[in-house]
Each structure stands twice: as structure tokens, then as C-alpha cells.
Image (cartoon, rainbow, N blue to C red; front, side, top):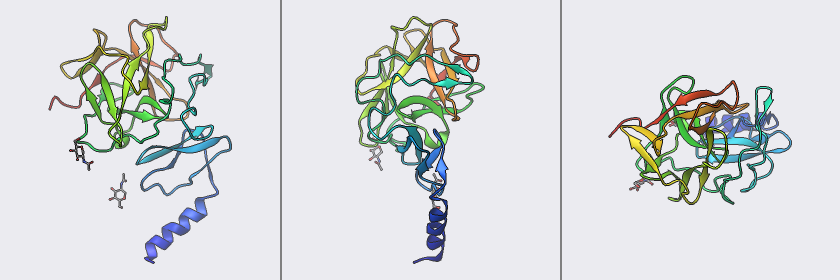
Length: 229
Ligand SMILES: *[C@@H]1O[C@H](CO)[C@@H](O)[C@H](O)[C@H]1NC(C)=O
Ligand SMILES: *[C@@H]1O[C@H](CO)[C@@H](O)[C@H](O)[C@H]1NC(C)=O
């Protein structure tokens, strides 16, 4: 066996006992750190390059709509239950084929050049290295590695001005569009973005007014194609 391979195998063994905290990376292409999550969490593949420790065991029910997301010291109410069954987590990883679709990114502080992708079964903003690729028209679909799509659906039924956006295997929001390079739903292009606790990712909400979910959130962010090409 090649010496460097032996070395990296040895370092894998050496670090195997270190436990990875919730929402931290535990795997992916080139990951050489620990793949063992803390008790109560399992290492779940989000895409080819990134696996993350998520609460519970593997399976579509892992990221449940009743999970309480703690942002700062404020406990947030459960995310509305719009996520159709079986779409809470990705069973197939998202595609890493840049020819399969376009990237979607944000251009403003604090989410300057973060890219939309599947993180923990939700459409979230994260690093370019793990960006998703999307096909878009009146629907917006994340392309999965098996060619299937997870559509961006907005729950307009909630009473707050910020409306949660989740993935669905069928598109229930069919009035997506573009103004120039800016995504909109109907005439609304503003988003509220909120940091996901214990992670560098951000949750996204369609913002139809000005209400804030938490003081750590930022209003009036827009999502763009990196270029009109
Ligand atoms: C993974 O490692 C290979 C070989 O060293 C390298 O070519 C590739 O760019 C790395 N990929 C990532 C995502 O770091
Ligand atoms: C990437 O996607 C394009 C467009 O769908 C397809 O033609 C091509 O075969 C794909 N490449 C790979 C390596 O899957």
C-alpha cells in the first residue's frame, strides 16, 4: 500500500473516537476528521462533499417539522408543517453537476455570496463549495444526483409576514419568476435570512412585510443567478 494512504488511514483511526457535535461536519469527499457523532445524532450525507451530524437516526423523519430551532437564547416556534412526507431529508444527495442547473446566491451582508443548497433537508444558504444547482421557471427545483428535483415551496398560509420556504417533491409554489437576475415569488423578492444555530448556514423566508423572527435575522435580502448567462 502507498505510504501516504497508510498515513491517512492511520490518522482516520486516530481521530475515529473524537465525537462530532450536532450540525458539524462528519464526512464527505476528502473529509479526514471524525465520522462519529455525539450521542443522539447520526452522520447524514447532505451531498458528495458534506455530511453533517443531525439529531436522531437516519431516514426521512429525522428533520421533523416540530423541531425547536434555538437561535441565540430565543426558542423559536415549530416550523409550519408544510413539508410533504418524505422530503424532510434528501434520500439522494443533491447533484454536483454544474451543467445540470444554475446556482442561486445572495449578494448582501451577512450572506454575501452564500449559495442555496440542501442543508439538513432544508433549502439553506451555505458555502459555494457545496452549492446546489437549480432549474427554474415558474417553479424552482434543486437538481438531485439521481436527476429528481426538490422544489422550493413557500408556505403562504402562515400569519407572519415571513413565510417559510421548504423542499417538496412536488411544486406547490408555481409563481416563481425572475426580474433581471433576481428571484421573486409573484411580486415579492425580499427574503428574511436567519442564522442556523451551531452552523454557518442561514434559513430563508419569503418576506412579504417587515416582521422579524429574531434579532439575529436580516431583512430584505434577495436571491440571484450569479449571471444572466
Ligand atoms: C479532494 O482531493 C482531491 C485529491 O487531493 C482534490 O483534487 C480535490 O480538489 C479535493 N476536493 C475537494 C472538494 O476538496
Ligand atoms: C451533467 O448534466 C448534463 C445536463 O443535464 C448532462 O448532459 C451530463 O451528462 C451530466 N454529466 C454528468 C457527469 O453526469
